[in-house]
Image (cartoon, rainbow, N blue to C red; front, side, top):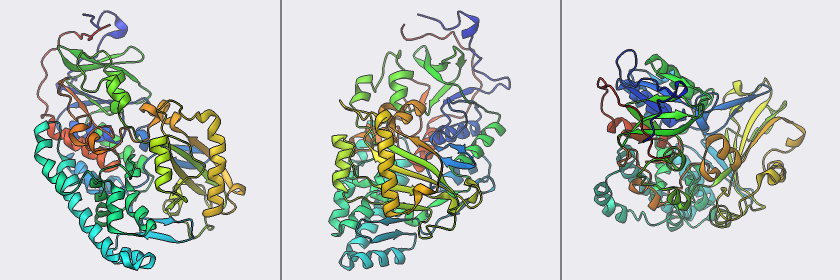
Length: 528
């Protein structure tokens, strides 16, 4: 058995900190990893977070270009009480640290025929929108809302906030899954309630926010409609990166540390337990427990490549259905703050095809000529993200991931795709855009693969189909490797800010309070 203490460069840092507290290592400073670090700090652990990027936040970080702040990942906050409860469990006040603003309306969907649907938190306003587009669908919409509320209570407040790593827990809930027709897709459920295709799209597209195909993801995810209506859609001033910065401050004030520009290469074992990590530069760190906020696929296929027992083998990772890829164009515009007055904080530009485009993205893995776009204009709410008089935009298009036999070569396709995106924006939303463009940045699935180590460049890790959810998803606690836990988009309950914060809440219920650590034996690797 190979020890990792044979040279000075590989000498491990002690598991127990100088204050006698047991040490916890968190791999990745995404929102899930930061949430986990906060909870472990509150439980008495001395926490070290290791992250390969230059700043905390992971996909929720930001970059600056010529005075424009580009928020790289999530743009909205739903279920804000999850953050407030997290802060409260750490003895802090979330609203004292983060300026959260409610958005009204939430977003506007524009359709190719010139019609539109505006989503808000008012039930009466939403019913009026439905009646305006399709009066005959009003009763069906009311039923859909009731369906959504029931699924929220069961799917989010119950299953989503507790561990699902025991098979008996799955067996107990199977009857409820059957009663709620979890086998039916989100789109199929919406289609049973309303006839108008525009409304079917408006009520079923939400799984795309967590990487799921509305044609195949379980109808449990219609819970998002209730979640939005009940708790609102919010924006954090300074972007989600401001939340990440506030989380980092809490961690440091708890006595923890965050090491940026540090890439973990392997999770190390001692006597069958996870007990530390080795970084790419050879540094070895000991720990009493390890939490991985790296993508679950990367954790199993790379960080645990020498582990003797893996529930998710490299073959299983490769065969899983992964979320779609993302083409994201970040750009600033010059002198446009008072232009495009009807373009608010969030706009969805729906393409001419819905089901066909989804099949191209998820099933055929074909880069279509047409597209649907999610347009984020944060400068209408938060002027700090752009110079005076200017705007900052983030435009996202779902595209195939890098899996399959013939993945898209984005080195050649990125420029033509951006040009098509510009044409759609000028025709449908932002006339004259090309003359007002400022700094810009483009992320493709290849960027997600290289920057975030996301398998197949998937934007949201493993797709949340029914047989890749709950017990079927990578578990929050690895039964085969004691001392190792998972948080983030690839584990239970799933992607999106509520999902990754809830994954850390589940972690907090699984990890015991810190106790003084005993002296540790040398590390041993599973194999050469």
